Amino acid sequence: VAGEELLRVDDIEVIYDGAILAVSGVSLVVPEGAIVALLGANGAGKSTTLKAISGLVRAERAEISRGGIRFQGRDSTRTAPNRLVREGIVHVLEGRHVFSHLTVEDNLRSGGFVRGLSRAQLEQNLERVYAWFPRLETKRKTQAGLTSGGEQQMVAIGRALMTQPTLVLLDEPSMGLAPLIVQEIFEIVARLNAEEGVSFLIAEQNIPVALKHASHGYVLDTGKVVLQGSASELLEGSHLQDVYLGRR
Ligand code: ATP
Image 1 (cartoon, rainbow, N blue to C red):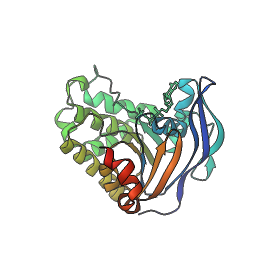
Image 2 (cartoon, protein in one colour; image 1 turned 90 degrees about the vertical axis):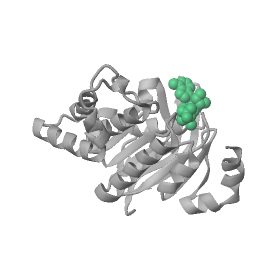
Image 3 (cartoon, rainbow, N blue to C red; image 1 turned 45 degrees about the vertical axis):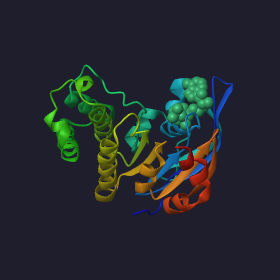
Image 4 (tube, rainbow, N blue to C red; image 1 turned 180 degrees about the horizontal axis):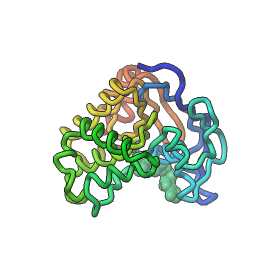
């Protein structure tokens, strides 16, 4: 159920290495309690937009050279990533990034350390993550690198949930996964949203899956928003059909 504005990105420009303009004029809103899709082809600027929001751009020698970002009404444009995690924004990077030599459970616990949780809170959150991803509980002692791609994506999302986020930035959760497992992951995301009120901004190339669960979408092309609207408007509109769905 969407309500007040949780996140506002206002006309940002992001430059890598002081020279490469990756994003030039992206504005978007994530209402409280919403699932919003950020769509577009490879290199369109989806990952860079998410990194601007989570503060991780600076770790890649990039900077927000114009525009601003507000989270819960406060300017977060220059807030450090670890502080943003404490304030409720967590970023699940593209490509899953689990610690492959650690067990599934230790991967999940590492999310709680980022947040500096007490032991009791950590155990409580772990139980909560296992309730959402029962598959992970059966694999808790398995090295994360030995689990399937879908399970690794669940570990990455579960680790993010350990931080008790308000807003989860998900970068291409469907990447390289079979349709059934993609469906399973998106269904869990939708339930987390409906039952716990967690908001999501999801970068995806898989437009049908993303718009099935999102209420709104923004389409990026070469660093700009070229199309936006409600999920149904975007799915019905001929532009998206022609330009993106028709190509697939
Ligand atoms: P993908 O799905 O491939 O990640 P994307 O839509 O997320 O695509 P970005 O990764 O944000 O797109 O890339 C946007 C532009 O910024 C591209 O032209 C890319 O080459 C450039 N870019 C991304 N990361 C860097 C970096 N670390 N250094 C320099 N340029 C970069």
